Amino acid sequence: MLEQLFGSRTRIKLLKIFLAQPTQLFFVRELTRAIGERINSVRREIANLIRLGVVIQRGPEEVKNAHESAHARSKNKRKQKKKLAADSRKYYQANPEFVLFHELKSLIFKSQLLAGRSLTEAIGKLGNVRLIMLTGFFVGDADAPTDLLIVGTVHRKKLIALIRQLKKSFGEEVRYTLMSTHEFKMRRAMTDKFLYRVLEGERMVLVDRLE
Image (cartoon, rainbow, N blue to C red):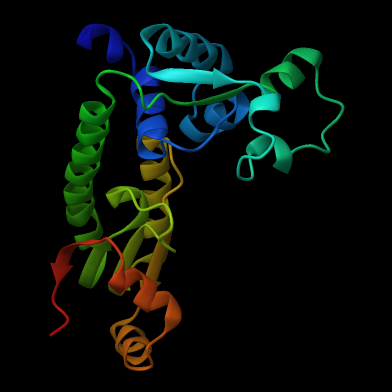
């Protein structure tokens, strides 16, 4: 079973996406863009995950009342080829009834935390970092306004390059927020809504040299 679950790089990337956002509905082209793999490889691995029971497929009639989906966001693209149009009408989602669902989700979560620690080292090399906080995607909080809060002075272009690498590694867009120490302290003193949503939510502090 384990050999089948972690059979390829593409499959691992898909598992990370599905298990990090277990209630989210995805379609093939959306997943292909997210993980940067070939569409035929993504189709093949989704079929394997469905066969293993990790992922379930849903048709458009099943998701009419679901939250905003990628299909709804792209409904005006009527001139796609029939095969691609068919793909956009099929949705895929993690199967919460899978026998190892919670164990796999926990494993993915722990792998993200380990990646976060590696991220700390990488960010630390970009400048004078006073605070690094993981939220959102890293701690399984889909409602958080950001995934990564950095306070300090860093090389912006190098940070953007690092964030792009993270997207390829996780198969997921990593939202980051960068503030100077002065801005952070000022917004905290003003009870800034955005900042307090981060500070009061689920989070993991990896670096704290503010005081």
